[in-house]
Amino acid sequence: MRKAFRFFISAVCLILISTVSSGAGLAQVVINEFLADPARDWDGDAVYSYRDDEWVEIANIGSLTVNLDGYLLADGEESPVWRYGFSGTLEPGAVFVVYGSDSRAWEESNGFPIYGLSLNNVGDRINLYRVSGSDTTVVDIYQYGDKAAEDDRSVGRDVHNTDIWLIFDAFNPCPESCDPPGCGCVPTPGSVNDCTTGSVSESWGMIKSRYRD
Image (cartoon, rainbow, N blue to C red; front, side, top):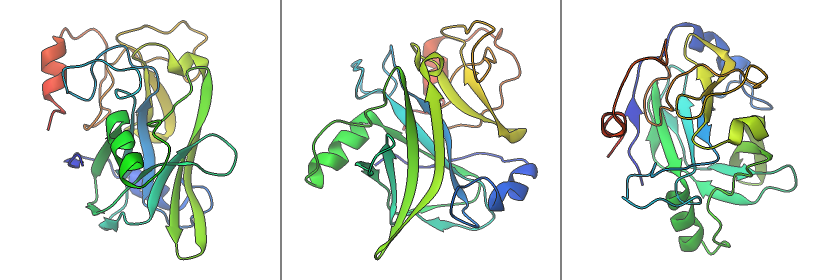
């Protein structure tokens, strides 16, 4: 299981605790960023895989540490098919990245069909649930379209206004018709979405070193 990374969340995030989730009054854990169509090795195993290198990042935008037991990821709009089950804790201001390879390992160890995160490249819905006893609660949902699932484009919350979603499209620039709009920044699994310009020149090794275990 991959470790959580700490990062700074601006004060505006705390205001959103009671409004950012769907059906979970004071949820602190939200979907923060994801990449549905990888074209390079994102999980750091030195092997590219369209399935293993997808990823979904969650964040704790609250002021309290959250016990992640019972939180699960699913995709699609029908009855949930669990893709990953979280465990442990997530501290305030921390994020946790689930790669497709993590999802496959979890599915195999829990007796589920082995698909990975299974994020559809023509559009899909990412669902974050919390299961407690017989209660299954929707914590957060994000629906995306095909423009958000082009090669190496991630979609994530603007750290300065987490109601706003952006496409991180430095590796594959969006046209003006992209929804959400492109920001020219690189995807940031495991770190804060704080890029202000896409013109900064960095090698892929430098970028990758920021979130490698």
